[in-house]
Length: 141
Image 1 (cartoon, rainbow, N blue to C red):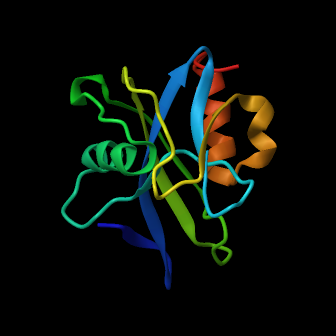
Image 2 (cartoon, rainbow, N blue to C red; image 1 turned 90 degrees about the vertical axis):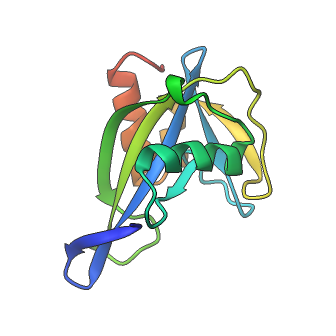
Image 3 (tube, one colour; image 1 turned 45 degrees about the vertical axis):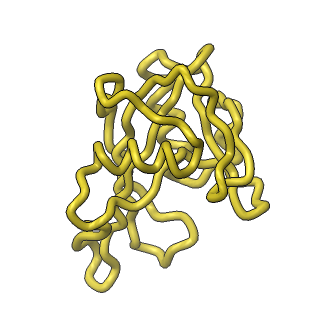
């Protein structure tokens, strides 16, 4: 299920995202020649769990195969959805994972970036909140 009821007429967008952390930085991506950085991830497909969506999106966006045993849910961020009408929320379930693979941009993204909280101004609301929470957990600078 990719959406659920939120504000009447504006269903909440349900997404899963992957937090790959290395050297106190987290991986984010850019797409469509934009400077906005965001977590690798995307909408949860019908019949798919958030866990499975996170693994699928990592493969699709950053070309890594995650070991399911390395994937664990960290937290959920619910904020105004970037580029959507006021009142439309995104509920992003963030999963921490590790991989020996080197993440690279796929056909869906233009570039990968290792970021810290210093890059929060380049993020949409969900990304800013994710960086804040990752720093609060002591995972990134």
